[in-house]
Image 1 (cartoon, helix red, strand yellow):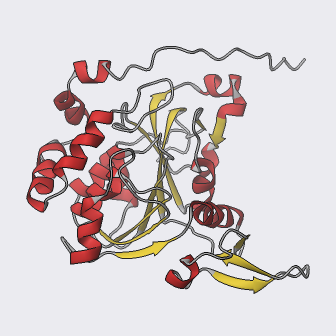
Image 2: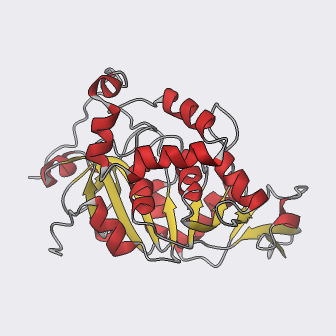
Image 3: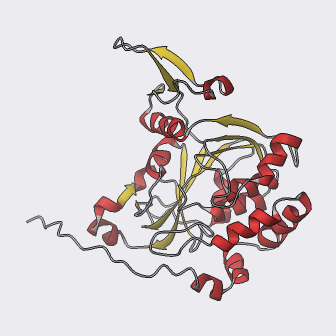
Amino acid sequence: MDKHNKLITMSEAVSRFVDDGSSVAIEGFTAFICFAAGHEIIRQRKQNLTLIRMTPDLIYDQMIAAGVAAKMVFSYLGNPGVGSLYAIRRAVEKGIPRPLALEEYSHFGMVGRYIAGASNLPFFPLRSYSGSDMPQANPLIKFVDSPYGDGEIAVVPPINPDVAFLHAQRADANGNTQLWGLLGMQKEVAFAAKKVIVVVEEIVDEDVIRRDPNRTLIPGLIVDAVVHEPYGAHPSYVQGYYDRDNAFYLDWGERSQEPEATDAWLQEWVYSVPDRAAYLAKLGQERLDSLAPGEMMADGVNYGRYA
């Protein structure tokens, strides 16, 4: 790959960077959730993955329903605003379509793990587990004596996913990636992961990136590949590009309650469409137009010029 042009297709990214048995993080806190990556992983029938995410919602429910995962490392899980994730429940409670191991943390516990992984730290300390039952459920949450004499403090280990798929508004061909809106832990995950795939709505020239450097959360030097995938985060949202498709979340909440209906959904929306372009064509332009976010423009700033 030309080091100055890291553009590849989503199919190539999954084939090249996601091995059976690897640990995969598809992050994004409510927004920027790369469903396109999850669907391609399903389509390529990857196996025995460890799925890592702060807030597993529909995308991991769909991946687990497809049987790609053996384990999930997470904090809160649920279908936002709707209810349970039925495929994950079936996997945990009944082993359908295969058993699923769980490793659970609080939100801040997962934040700490990502920060420790990004910073090459042996652990991350936090006080919020005092009085919690979670350490009893997760032996990796440990307590140590503070070296400053103020008692015990909980620690969590670093996490370094084998590969992370991170969605954003735009990047240049070298992977310098800009985000704005609800950022979540995209930057920390990028620095923690061993391989980083950024998936963007737009590919822009390097001079666009240079004109607004403070928006560059993920520098190209840590990016392994760039995928141009408009609407790649649907049905979640991308600030300024499209809104959340609430009807999609409601539909999954209803259709995922039984294995047969879940399998039919996967066949219709994943296996039977060869790529994201076909997915969008099936969704229809009218549906996409209904998600238009409108405009609320940010003010420009003067960075000045060097002599």
